[in-house]
Picture 1 (cartoon, rainbow, N blue to C red):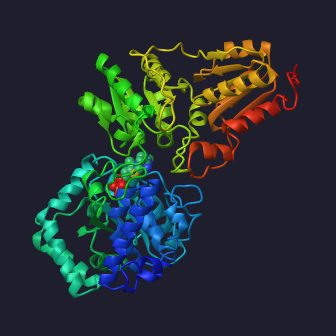
Picture 2 (picture 1 turned 90 degrees about the vertical axis):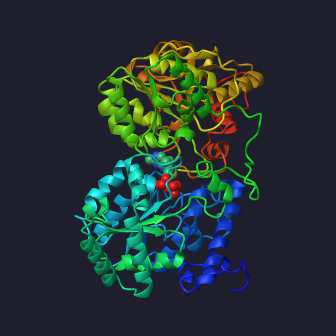
Picture 3 (picture 1 turned 180 degrees about the horizontal axis):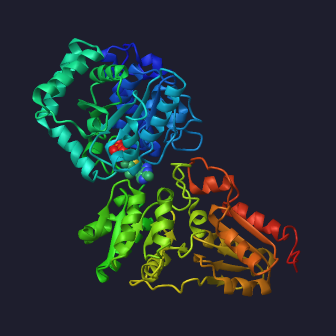
Length: 640
Ligand SMILES: Cc1ncc(C[n+]2csc(CCOP(=O)(O)OP(=O)(O)O)c2C)c(N)n1
């Protein structure tokens, strides 16, 4: 173990970290950092969060024994160190978030050391509590540890769990990994409160004393007596009870989250606690990588970069603007002209592009923390007072707010506009982040309109349509760059429920949404070239209400209908068309293309993942050709 690069290589299972000495642990932590920076520099990943939990994770694996003991990581984007220590330091780590590489999150399928998978925030405390209750019922004695970032305390679910812990179990260990950042700077009263705890000299002194006490005399009960006495003596004036203690959860902190030996002592102590306990750890997001320390928001999640300079490798100067940036710019322009427009984000100001509104009109920008359910209710309340709220929430995270969408916004027909970025695939993130369900979960709710633009200019028009519609409006658009079309200076509201017929033809009409419109056009071009047949291509624009008039017209002049969408087939856009046919007693061959009834893994790119289920351009062309029985025939379609 003398060679500087030897230690991590020899860690094959968590037990291997237990016997390392102080110096070896220091080297191990450095090697882990190098490994994370090396791997993420190639393919991107959650750099800052992982660099911040190196010591904390090493200490966890020294003090606890997974898989007997279990860790419940909130979001689990910070699980790379845990992966490296649990037998996954191989080629798959090198390709993390890529095809045949490890997932960027924890996954029960990936390892027995991953007690619980995640990707959405706020799930750690509730799921860990569930595990504790099950353990207690089974009369087992293993330890359950929830690790949650400070931003997890902006989530309603975290608070619901906190409310439930002390009445449900005596043995619950919570690690609060406080780095003061969500993706952006953390917001809200809890964040301020944690800061007060950190800066309260009484706590700092008390726990410095506690730490040195632990160093001298390891042993939980004595420490507890010491702490209780200290509090009694000072009648809580010097060390006021934390909010956790008032909820029946013993609080210890603030604790240096980068000192492995000290952390191990605190964790060993937590194992002996006969009451639920929270350890408040202070960590630095991006620790050990100066560029990440300087810009924690940028380095929360990064694309490929030069590991020496930190310079991004993925930015191509001539790339079209991203949908999120078009959204932000357009909203700021619309809001400048209409003072009722307000923007709401649930902890994703830069990811959604809503930070543009923050820069332009800060008083009409609201970051509510990781609180999608609250964000939607807040919007509903604002709408009752004449405001025109725009909720910018990723498709996958809007799932959190389903009840307020139905019960508060749609039932009361309130004019809230939802802009759902990341509709479709988030290829590197995988199943927790793909936005493949929103059409199905929104289409069945009365009163709302649902739109999907084929390009950035249409996104602007749809925003104008939604905001002026007077009803709930949902606009879904994909992650990443637009197609590079020229945008009008002033967006024009669309006629609600009217599709755009791009090619007028016969035989078959393809109804597509989003970027599949472009695919449909190129398929039509190929048919024209190969068979001399012009087929119809429709940009549906509105998933709801469907342009039934145009659809029923086309039934008279076409022999089949094809639909293509970036959503699960069940309950999706194509299903809506089938329902219309059923309602109108129409029987016509229909072929729907969309995502199958299974979770889609992570992978390299949208195109690659689409090709696995036959949704890439070439497969679609061939499938439609087969459906029309055109193959090997020249200009004699079977339906002719
Ligand atoms: C429901 C939900 N909304 C938004 C996100 C996007 N998101 C991923 S990580 C993160 C911030 C997490 O901050 P924190 O828990 O403090 O951990 P840190 O990254 O600072 O270590 C957010 C907002 C999410 N994962 N889930």
